[in-house]
Amino acid sequence: MGKIGLCFVNPAPQIQPGYVTTMAKRCEEIGLHSVWVIDRIAYDNLEPLTLLATAAAVTNRIRLGTSVLLAGLRHPTLLAKTVGTLDFLSGGRVTLGIGFGSRENDFTAVEVPFQGRGSRAEEAVKLMKRLWTEDGVTHQGKFFKVENLTIGPRPVQSPHPPIWTGGGADVALRRAARLADGYICGSTAIQEFPSVWEKISGFASAAGRNPGEIEKAGLTFMAIDENRGKAVEACAAYLNRYYGGVRIDVDKHFLVGPPGACAERLSSFFSKGLDTLIIGTAMADLKQLDLFGEKVLPQLKT
Image (cartoon, rainbow, N blue to C red):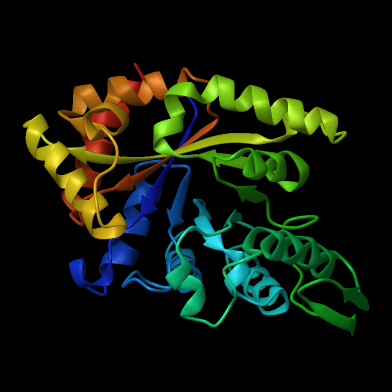
């Protein structure tokens, strides 16, 4: 069985201030590999790196990841410093999942052009890697310019926190093959992950990289309920709030229904070749995490 992480996807109106610390501690207690968080600007989610810093303060082992952070919305110097600080404070537990953005309103909200967002994010990643590992960095790019710049703190992880990327288009797969330490596929692509991975492997080999060095991950969503229909409704409600509609077959692609059904599907997802599965809980109810730890995980270990 691969590694399992929980992704915090619930907006602030659905939780109380103590929810994040309780959730993070419980994830570590039940033996999960990681805690992840989404990133949006024009939405009422919690700011991701602040959330992960809070989780870091009440945990000791569990990894802390973004799935995914919109790197193109932030200046890479500031982002490198913030992530370096988080990695330092957490004792080297950060995984930085990078996204390129699909909603223009997140970009207009911070006065960053939507056009060229992928190239902007890619340049930002390359510059951050230098800032984490070099002194006196000088960079003159299409989007960013720094001169003789040294920042700290350096990340605890060497040479830097792992960089994972997502996206399903060929341009995103090529970026993952070129620059990522891990790739996160979306929930609808998990069933076809072997063919997705075949593409990434080919792109990586063509770029002179060993595909075996790229972590294979997937993101899905979960609602545990003995009434499968209610579980499907809960996931659909999340999708409708976040995306403004339900454009996929929830029953087919998500972990929904009784604990046994969720465990069976989770195992089938890992059979597609994933190393890590990131699970977003569609309901802001800590009982879901209890059910997952008490009823689902034990079935995976037998």
